[in-house]
Image 1 (cartoon, one colour):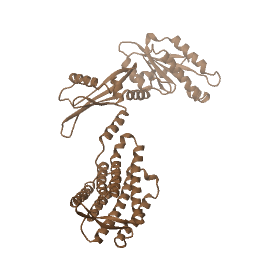
Image 2 (cartoon, one colour; image 1 turned 180 degrees about the horizontal axis):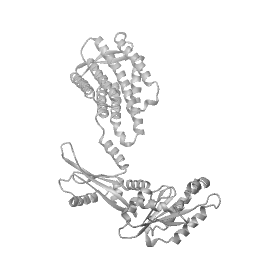
Image 3 (cartoon, one colour; image 1 turned 90 degrees about the horizontal axis):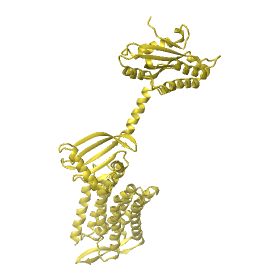
Image 4 (cartoon, helix red, strand yellow; image 1 turned 45 degrees about the vertical axis):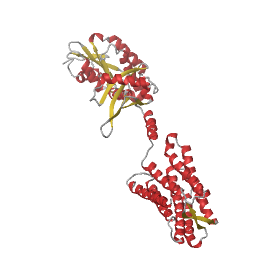
Length: 499
């Protein structure tokens, strides 16, 4: 049995060293501590195996002392690992310094025990016809060592217990294996202390715990954690997602997609049937990707959705499933609509700006029909603004734009060229001069003052002979005759005439 135990210890030691070598290129927050833990545990296994050799008493005493010192340092490293892995002991100051001081003192004490025997003494026993050395007489120095080991093992265990109590259930699987191994160390140590077996099996559990910590912290992310994290992220995602396996069974659907297709996640058989029908109608065997846009009416509102279907393959090119992604582009369209409106409309009056008026009017004027291009021009508007204030001047401009909007059914297009000049195009039989002048006179009376700031609005009319003429040229001609200085009789309305 002794030889078997020695072989097991050396196998574990080489396994720990091998793990140390394999994680050198890994990137992790706990990589350095994991490497130190692996080396320290390997050293502990090797030193403990020496205690089984039939050698001189001094060598056995020294090996036992070094083994107990190694356990001190191993617990110190485990505590530092737990501190970094769980963040539980971050609030406790001077923990690291205090443990290090104790480890140094206890290491010196255990090594000196080989000569002084002030801490413990060894005596030989027979077990299964083989000789072993066990600790016999124990002094207060040894009791302090045991108390240190027990306290810090329980502290490490409490660290993982507190962590599992604080984190979400999906993260608990990261800490349960280490917590279970820590409990196993406590049980193995207690069993060795109170049984007649002269072999401390806890040293094997230390090695298994170190290997487990390396495995879980450097290599493995539990699948439940991956799935739960994926589910939380996708469910909070703004797009609808629905995933199928290689048998066309729905394995995941988030709330957005579920609401869109009006099927709950529990009704996966119905989803399966609908998906197979959709595949027969829309997919061919060689089609790996499909994308289309579709307008839907939801709660009386027209919304645009982008649909994407994609097959999934593993690294060897084998089909493993597929997914649907649903993107609501209604918000994007609304943003584009608002941006287009901002670029094409005057910000003060909310009617077409100069450039947009030119473009729209050019498209709407039909050949063979008679039109007028009409321009409103406020005489000396800068002076009016200066005397009455910018706010009142803006109000005048808004009222003029409201007059145009009020008569939009009779107009082809209308807009604001710049500052105090408004233009509109209309068919000749739609122009009612008396009505137009009456409305403008009301505006003049409402906002004008007879003495300081009279308000005069003049109208220029350009008869459009050629609808193909540039609208910009039409507007300049209508604007030219609307200026007061170009009027001979200072009437409100004037016509453009070729000289």
